[in-house]
Image (cartoon, rainbow, N blue to C red; front, side, top):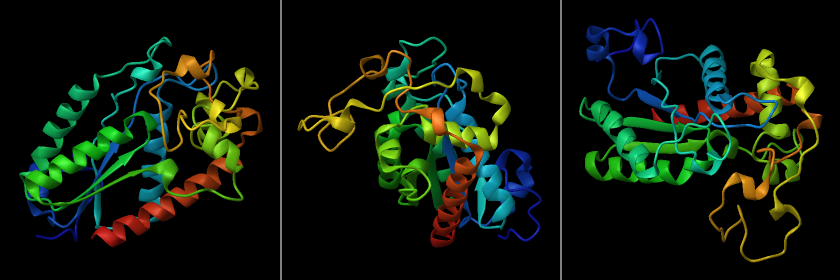
Length: 255
């Protein structure tokens, strides 16, 4: 099996005969995202578009025969956002089952390296379960990662905004301003609060080590957690550069 004459790095653009010839060591990148509210200034497909943008940038900068980008699984588990219009969420158990049924197809084709690349914080635990089940059944090399955990992004964005502005704040808004500025309603950008965890000294938190279950409306009436006012495309580019660099390292280590 070989990849020497692979015309595209996107699985769905290949033919069935070409798939047969793909080296089974090739890393299959499965993107996981979500369709959910991101406040008044970002679209419902923010997580989806960010992941698409990351993979397009990565494919341009680090193109090789070591990986294939799989079709995106973009209906995710987003029950925490369902109080806001537009969010489409799948029940957690159904999401895990549905994802496993998709991934099992390629495992049965004897592909040995799978990367689960996630962009939605609300389904990190789900991705962990999916990876564990696939590893147990097929004994493959499976890695899972969420892009915004790839780095601390020091010197690019403040630690308080990175750690406590995790939904529609400066981080995500800057990325969207870089990748898809036409989708950002810039006139709707206004001040919003960080997570209550920022100034809390309590043992039980929303997103620290000891967590309670929460829905977004408990933290924010607008759906935004963070302050997007300082967002700009330059910050977004620096974040994406960091993410694509790390993604390249992951692929090289897996192949």
